[in-house]
Image (cartoon, rainbow, N blue to C red):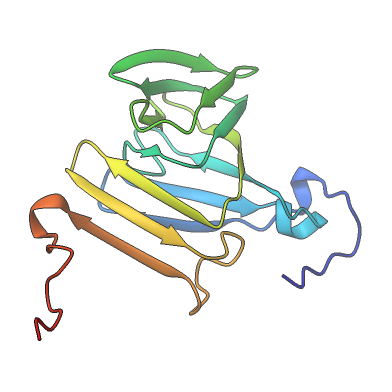
Length: 169
């Protein structure tokens, strides 16, 4: 993996945030932490959401268990077809279970900041109930832009049969 780190500790005020998102609903700022301090088995980052925003679509994982800790602000957790108010000091668990999709939404008028932590398996399958799609990922979670990563997002109705394209002779 070749992680480079200067020390095994970093302060919140030393983090570099990158913005990402799409459209009006999805926008967040994320600061990688794990790779900055030498973590190899767990991933963690700090996420900032402005009012009305969410970082990712409502989704579940087959192999990744996520834990979130709210540092500041309030919002709403969508989890397995229920909604829960969240606030600073809350721990949130999203198990590796396709029947437990999750999403954090800033439903307040102030910034919502949380830590996102998870295991980092080499392979995962994600389901997206709102849009009816699925995703398959295999590769390095610490380097999502790596050309060695394999990722596909599709809908079940666009899938092909196992034998599609195979020679019959």
